Image 1 (cartoon, rainbow, N blue to C red):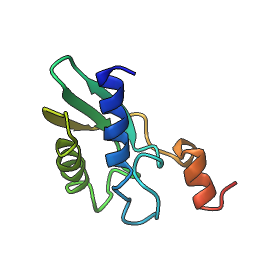
Image 2 (cartoon, rainbow, N blue to C red):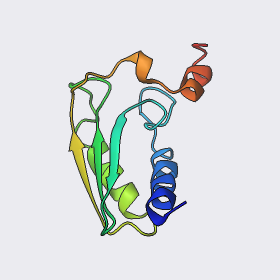
Image 3 (tube, helix red, strand yellow):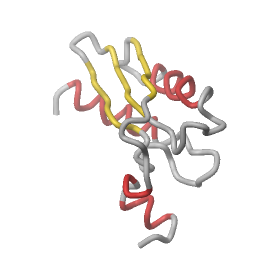
Image 4 (cartoon, rainbow, N blue to C red):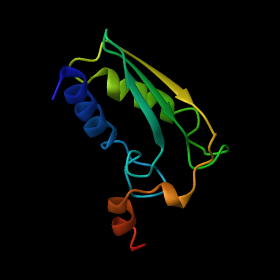
Length: 104
């Protein structure tokens, strides 16, 4: 595994500590994280969504993601971009999340 892959794994583990306030599943397994890009200077770009555009956490969640990922050892800087394309739906849940929510 190279440095970027190791860092990506650390970032994913940190994202798994952030839970959706309305559903007892972490945001990574919910499928709210669409993309994690790491450039050669270890600048991290995260593209994420929310369960709905009018989500009460719309203002807080990107800042929480940014702050959490900034604390990951090896990350130089973080930018979080919020998108609603494609729109999130329940099919984006990981298998682990589906089990946790008794959907499978």
